[in-house]
Structure formats: structure tokens, C-alpha cells
Amino acid sequence: MTELDAVAVDPANAEQLAAWDGDEGRYWAAHADHFERALAAYQQRFFEIAAIGRVDHVLDVGCGTGHATRRAARTAADGHALGVDLSSAMLEVARQRAQAEGLAHVRYLQADAQVHPFEQAFDVAIAQTSAMFFGDRVAGLANVGRALRPGGRVVLLTWQPPAANEWFREITGALAAGRDLPTPPPDAPSPFSLADPDVIDGVLTAAGFRDTAIEEMAAPMWFGHDTDDAHRMVSGLMGWMLDGLDEAARTRALEDLRATIAAHETPEGVLFGSATWVTRADRL
Image 1: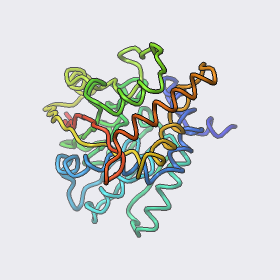
Image 2: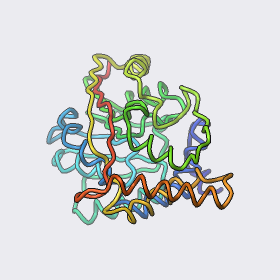
Image 3: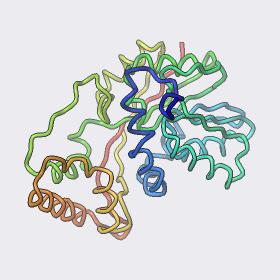
Image 4: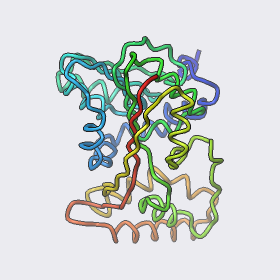
């Protein structure tokens, strides 16, 4: 049995497992501080909407290196927090950081939240930039709903369309090097598969939730301490976009990326505009 075979996944999520329990997940784990800081500007409002209580049991879906799980656990001091993710490397970082903080009521599990047989034990489920990667969004969120007690709620952070996200437009524009890149089908896993509020509402309704409330947010997204730092991070994360280019085109794309990043360097680091939806819905 291989490492991948040890994790039960829906076939629709097999490619996600291969990526997140492979090189992509290891890259995120190795740069945990950068990725946890990237969405810092959204955290306060997200957790206000989640309204986690002191005795709540919290499920963090696609928890990565566990920043949101740990924040939830600090609030739910007499409750419990479970973070689930496909990446064993990121979960190892999450466990180390929870232990370092003395958060004994936090647990992490490598699992596919679309099919894992959760106990119906949670008051709130949170998912920050993760629900859009379910192979079947309705099935995934329905399974999360089954993990919630009656009256439980789910809170999602999802990207608005690319046109509202400067970071995506400018970074991918530089690395595309003038090529027209293919876009995934609307229902396929991608960062923007839950970018339309009508789709969000429809998916949650089909998954068995009600009273969906969607709030628009915009905030700067942090990419690094300075131009060199951010250029290393982005080129390492998205270097696959250079595949198929000859050496001259690769060099030009990386130079364009550096120029784009340099134009966004501020005293607080490299900041690009971003926009999200924060959605809350109640379990039927």
C-alpha cells in the first residue's frame, strides 16, 4: 500500500490528493509563515461571522498548516477543534504549532472531507479558500453538513471573480508570457469555482443548508517582505506556468513577474488587491 492509498478519497479528488500530498503541499508546509500571513486581513471579520463560542466544537475543512484551527481553538477554550486536510506535510506543521501553543484540545486528521465519515459532533464548520476545490462541491458540503449538530453553521471564505482579484490578474498575466491560458470548466475544482454568489447559494442549498448570508470583502493580500522575497515565493509556487516556454520566454516572464511585484512593494511588504466572499449558512 502506498502513502496515497492510505487516504480514502472520492475519485473526483484523486488529483487534489496527489498535488496536496505531494510537491505542492510540501512547498506550502515549507513556507507556512508566508501562506498563513497572506490572508491575515480577512481573519477578524471571518471569525466575527463564524461567532465561535467558548464551548463550541469546530471543524476546519482544508486546514492547511492550521492557523484557522488554532485561532478557533483559542476561542473555543472549553470545546474542541479538528482540522482536516489532504496534505500530510502541512498537517505535520499544524500539529507542531498547536503543540508549541499548548493547545491540547486541537486535533488534526488527514482525510478527504467530501467522504470522511465524521461524527455529528460539531457546532460550526469553517473553510478558508478550500471549499472550491471539492471534486463535487455539493457532495463535499453535504458531508460537512452531516458533521454538524442541528442548528450548526458553516462559514466559507471564497474568492470573488478574477476581475476583482488584482493578485491573480497581474501574477498570471506576467507568467502567461502573452499566451491565452485555458480556464477550467465552471464546475471543476479551481480557486474561482465559488466566485459567483448565486452559485454559492445554489450549492449550499443543494447541500442541505438554509439562510445563506454572503458578505463582500476586499483587503490587501500579503506576498512577501520585499520584492526578492515575494518573487521567490511566487516563482516557486507558480513556476509550472512556465512549462512549454523556451529559455528566452521564461526569462522574460520572470522579469515581468519581478517588475509586477516590485510595483506592489510597500513598507508593509508586497501587497496586491484581493476580494472575497464570506458566507454563512445554517444546517437544515
